[in-house]
Amino acid sequence: MPSRCRIDRRAVISCLKDYGIVGAGGAGFPTYAKWNFDLDLLINAAECEPFLQSDKWLLKKHSEELKAVMSWLKKLFRSVTIAIKSKYIHLVKNLNTKVATLPDRYPVGDEQCLTFLATGKRIPAGGLPIDVGVVVTNLTTAYLAYQACCNNKPFVERYVTIIAPKKLLISKLPIGTPIELIASQLNLPTDLVIDGGPAMGEKSSGFTKKTTSALIFAPKDSFIYKMKTQSIESILQLARVACATCNNCTLACPRWQLGHPIDPASIMRKYSFNAPLEELKIASYCCHCNVCTLVCPLGLSPSRVNFELKKELRKVGRPDKLEAVERDWTGVASSFAASRLLADFELPNVPEYTEISIPSGIKLRIYLNSHIGKIPNVLVQKGQSVEKYDPIAKIDTPNNLGVNYHSPVKGIIENVGEEFVEIKVS
Ligand code: SF4
Ligand code: SF4
Image (cartoon, rainbow, N blue to C red):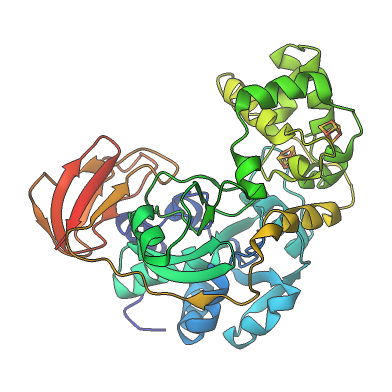
């Protein structure tokens, strides 16, 4: 571990905020707000959605550096454990760090499932790992935090898994890379591009973000295209009339299995009887893993119903924290269901690295809302020159949750919007 590494907690917190480190696994929660405490750190290397490879690529290609990352983390936390699926344990053997093995099931990377499987502790429903003395941080995030605190590098690029029929690729991409550029260089279909994994990913904004761990290029005739493009009106209409109350969704729900009060079958039943919002409050405990939708024999989507209900429920405040009850966590049905999502893509087992060239004249768009918290203030103006790593947006007051953003390339500021900055590559 280099001697220049920051190890004083206040210096680390300030560095993580300044250099824009947020959860790279998909959530985008500012890391400094989690690392404020000397608790047990659980490094999430589960990468549990089928075919995602970015964290595993990092483990394969940066194992020496990751050893230093682990030594540094041990100075910051009272314990450090890497949680990884047992079939990938060989990738972490040389990191001189305690390992917790996970079953090959989806969604073992959900932080509540992960904490339970790695430590045996059940986080209360509506609670956080900190409630049981644990901090969960994704592997790529920990690596980026080290780059910030030991090498003064802001978060401006990352590994992304690129998935398309018969193609499983990895590439290191600057934040803000246009999806069209990737598609044209690799000859990929653009009927639907999903940002994130097959189960939880959503339609891409057209540019990569700090939270983009994967991109799926889905052609119109694929199963995942049909699943992800169902209109919310038809989903809600079907939910009202077609549920067979078979209970499959509840039995497979990983949060229900953890003993939380979420119960998608009962929500569907009440929803079809127009129950008042008050009676549907348990939808707040849903983590949107989509397992319930994947296992429904009638093709209904309890997860989308929950999502819509949650929007309404947010207006009435955070859900109460409730102790979990004892239930068995199996996740068996969910792993089978998740693996079906990309079955028609006929993907290879091993990813290949591919270089995407970013020629001059290309415009990168950096979204300033790809984290949880406030949008930072833009520091640059149209026509201004920037170097790689220059700050382009800064969070204003110390009390606001949020992080700074930096330029991933040398270029000229092309456009400044309320939620993004566009940079033309020089
Ligand atoms: S699995 Fe489908 S049909 Fe069965 S209770 Fe759930 S939503 Fe209804
Ligand atoms: S999306 Fe479905 S399976 Fe996942 S937590 Fe919510 S209700 Fe449970």
